[in-house]
Length: 436
Ligand code: SF4
Ligand code: SF4
Figure 1 (cartoon, rainbow, N blue to C red):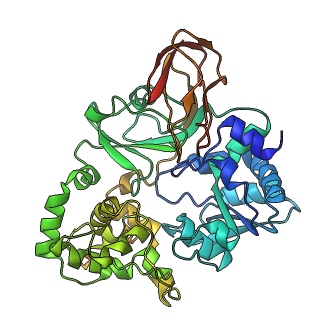
Figure 2 (figure 1 turned 30 degrees about the horizontal axis):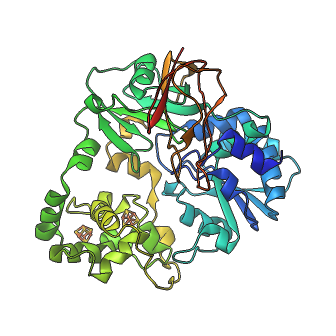
């Protein structure tokens, strides 16, 4: 089997974002292959851990992917503050033709469109994909999973950092389908009542401890951050959207700071969150072309935290995006990037104060632990595309690594494998349950 067949068989998908199937991404030919090692959000440590422990695998696999995609330029983009990881990568690269791009530490340095501009000087035209301008971007976890796939190891576990209000900040190797609550219990919590972010503090989803019963570790999990039960981020996320609209109508002063610091505006996209906020007073999202701009929003949340009136352009953009789902991107040309862009980037060290997570900024994982639970609930959709189709039935005995669900016929998707050995006890349209 070649690269594409192996990663398709192993069920590799984008390990940090929405889970785009890698066998589709790597089927293109591009000039650039960029390894996104910037770990966009604060308080996530999984990529740094993978670089420290698997640098040779990462470099070897980049060379294989680059050769397959006929790339002439291989770049590892990471923050210049990752000095230890940069040294380790330099040693692993040796004389190979891979450049390390040392980026300033700002948020969102790992945003795909921002990183492409920083690494290549190119910008993705509106409505197009990176491959249309000869660029492919993958994150560290995806390349490590590809390295495993090349050794015929399917995707059955996830490396994630677990920090915040926990007894020992940890790197956890967890079986896919393990309950988040069990994972947190095993790490040890400081408080019985808490909230938890799956992902980063800016773009991850935050849950009250009472609402995590059904949450499981998936192929795209990379971080759990435990915070206080009444943390400001939880309150902010749970504010009803109608309340936000009312607040906007009465308090938006049209200062346009949200626009002037919006990372997508800064790279030249026709996205003006202050205009979206002005127009929400009139409703009618489907008919008003201003809201088409919202389709360009990457939901990074910079606008929310810089708004002097504590409004939420991001949530209003999310509302518009949901309302306009399925609509094409607005027609429009990219402007040149803003000339003051470099002075308007949000420094990562300030971000942690602005979102009230500064007390965890010095926390680093102190142990690496592997959790293999007795029961897993493996979701059939952990990727962009269609749910995978089960190939097992209740009562079947499976071994860890066995195929249990495959890509739906003629659809975008990914194979799914048993993450523990045991008996299949439940097969639903959403998950497969396996008990030891
Ligand atoms: S920053 Fe806040 S107050 Fe200013 S225009 Fe944007 S939403 Fe309105
Ligand atoms: S969330 Fe706000 S800052 Fe981020 S891209 Fe959307 S409008 Fe711009």
